[in-house]
Length: 389
Image (cartoon, rainbow, N blue to C red; front, side):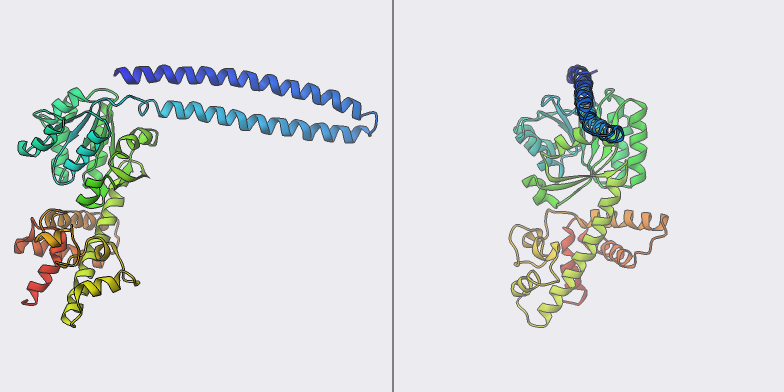
């Protein structure tokens, strides 16, 4: 067992022992209160009838027991907190990171900024150069990451990539340590997350799904939103790391629920981006200045993330992909993939999602027309080209 976990188990045992002493003290105090109360009630008996004294004594004892139960509950709560926090109390030991793409690179950088030594790998060696210059240790494959770190974060494009990184010939599970915490921030099929969790559990490790929302900008600024699924007792330990990369870390439930939340979010995001693009295009055709229209939308009921933070019209905002020929950001191909996941889950649960289905068709058409590597906000450009402009 890793050193820090062993030390933290000792801390837990000490906390438990201290609470046992507290319990003994509480019972002693309760007995003293009871005896003192009995003496006082004996004096009162000289002035009141016996039935009144009995009622007063019962109320007094009930109050003592209520207070005692509260204190015992608080004490036990602290023992529980000490137990579930044993992993999170570990010093800033090495954290593994697999996948240094548009999202993974800034996420790993934020771990370094927060004082965590990072050991990383990526299928494309050139992706590792920048983070290596910042002090990260680079290894050849995920198995080597697992051999050197017992807390690992993965950020990968798709379900097949996740399966390969975890269970492939050079995968994490080939050398994972017992007690390791594995956090996958990829957006994948919830069923795959459950499969990886089961495989990790057989080896004594813990797998949690923690997909993100916010895009490259939020990844760079450390303001991502993490949607976490997994064993609740491990959430505190996961949150310690994820808080270095995000402003919001939300526990959603058991393994797979983080992915469910992310799929729902991205379906709405796609629908919203298409709606914003259609609206902006219509306004421009009607003679409105796009910046003015965006300003009006953002002070009105039509305001949304796609209009006020990630506007798809070139020239309306700075620092977004639409101002850089739709380079960088969140790829159209990835959005099509996420919408495909939404369609699969909707089919499996017999949930009608007509707008989600249409959004999926539009993004698949975009991929076929050469937009696959462009940011998903390029749907505005796609619509303009469709009308011959």
